[in-house]
Amino acid sequence: MKTFNLNNFIHSILKYGGATFHLPTGRMTFKEGYFVGSADGEMITNLGNQRHKEEVIEHKVIDAVKEFISANGFELMDADNYLGGWIDEGKLYLDITNLFTDKKEALSNGYKNKQIAIFDNKRGLSIYL
Image (cartoon, rainbow, N blue to C red; front, top):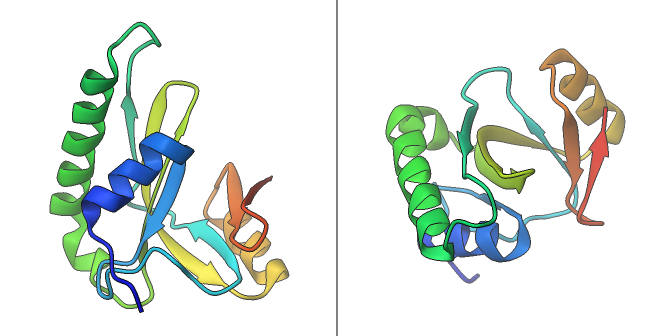
């Protein structure tokens, strides 16, 4: 099993628009299922407009990830929790996520936690609620 570090997580967010990281194992590759954000522990950071240089955006992402982990480290070390991050419309979203194998259960939890979407890990697609 290949392990990663937070630099890989940040690089994946910047290159692919999003990533999920499991702090207890250092893994970024997961079994099939659906990632659902929790009701608590979300952070949104404005990255500015596209005129900002890539280095500025990268530093904002690095700082936000460090701050989020510092504030939520205890929860993120729980084996059932994952660090999720993605960029949408110039904003970085970070949250604590959980992996569900059952789509109905994932959708139910997504609605309960007032999420905008859940993520289908197998297909690599967001399912908007």
